Image (cartoon, rainbow, N blue to C red; front, side):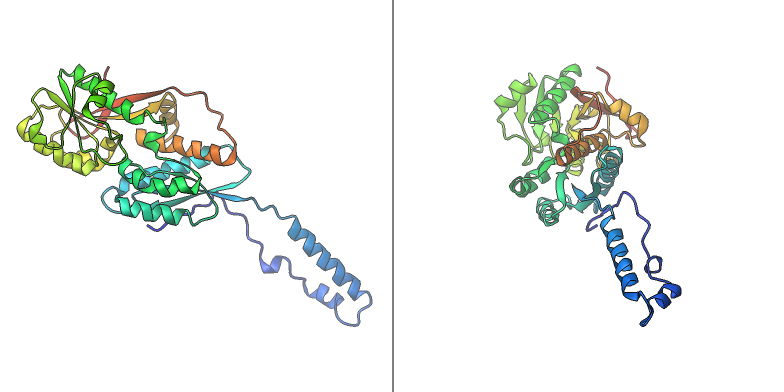
Length: 335
């Protein structure tokens, strides 16, 4: 998928027939007719005035960097649907708003190339995405240098996004009786902290370990990497510890993870959300918390680009934890 530009509406086209003079006017303007020059002048002035009265609104574009091809394309198209919903709900009528969606390929080098291509468009005013920390880290130098507003949805809450997710995973681990937390699958984009710093955040002993065979029987695992790699890690972990608690971040919602993970017993995922999420699910078809974050990020992008804020009440951010069942469906975890 190269890109999508989706207009919000279509004005009725003005045809050539609608303004060309008919045969009677042509006869009136024929050479030698008295007053023909004055009539010609009047017709030309009318046409000029008609053109000057045409209302042409400026057009802004909101970029979206997400996967639209390959393994994770379903997440990309869910994000695009959320961007469209936000544009439709945004109150500004001062400019036309178009989404400009480019495939980030699920790879850092592709994400950089897609960001570079987005920035060529002079009408680009903001960018939503990429959807994962490693791809955001790859695109960040280009997007920062461009000086436009941009945010990955998972980090809309601010710099505390990573600490909040790890703290929520640790809280779930303590609740389920784990004595420690292993952080595995680190990628660029996540804070590069040592075990002591993560331990202070989690209020639980933390180890950094990518080898599932080294996980202790009384430790839980918080996976920081991609959904498919997380599923492969979990399969290895289950061979040694069939009942180990396994937690993911927002990537845990990607259907690729549930399809490849095998046993989903004691598997959770965490994501930031706010008190508008339940209202949003009541009026939109997709209950996905990730889609909601894309929706909220798009509204923030539109507000920054236009100077118009949506009339929504102040929000209170929190980390929500979801639990998988054996069929691969997820529901909010009970406190």
